[in-house]
Length: 186
Picture 1 (cartoon, rainbow, N blue to C red):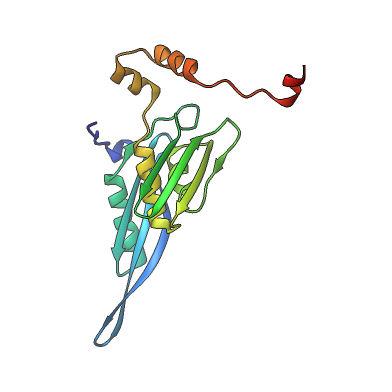
Picture 2 (spheres, rainbow, N blue to C red):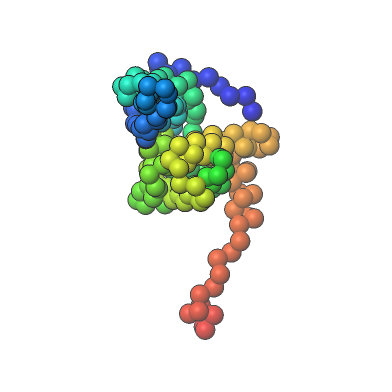
């Protein structure tokens, strides 16, 4: 599927710094310090982007990270302030699972995932991170997972169906809930 370029100037983007890392380079005269930052931008309404910036000063590194994040904006399909379906994605040695949640659940997420999903405007979500908990890799894995989401309307359009037809087909295929002990005793 072709990726549509989103113009960041049309959106009111909010910036969030996920991590600031001091990096030392050893040279003949001693150590040279620089900073790398991981930044998340989003409008809270289905658009999110991530970027890394590196510079000798923290504010400059953040500015570069914001520029990179504005270039990497994606559209996240939202259904009632949550995601349309479960997704499991791996980036490097970090693996993340995102699962839609009922209204009122809130965002159950860790340090690396929370800024990304909140910037996208997701209000109810269950998450789990497996493997490496390096914030940079977890942020990138979450971003990748959100980019893999497909709305019901897009999936129906791909299959040449209406969203209602696709939804009823999914509901017919869904397994019946298991009977509880009190129901079987009757």
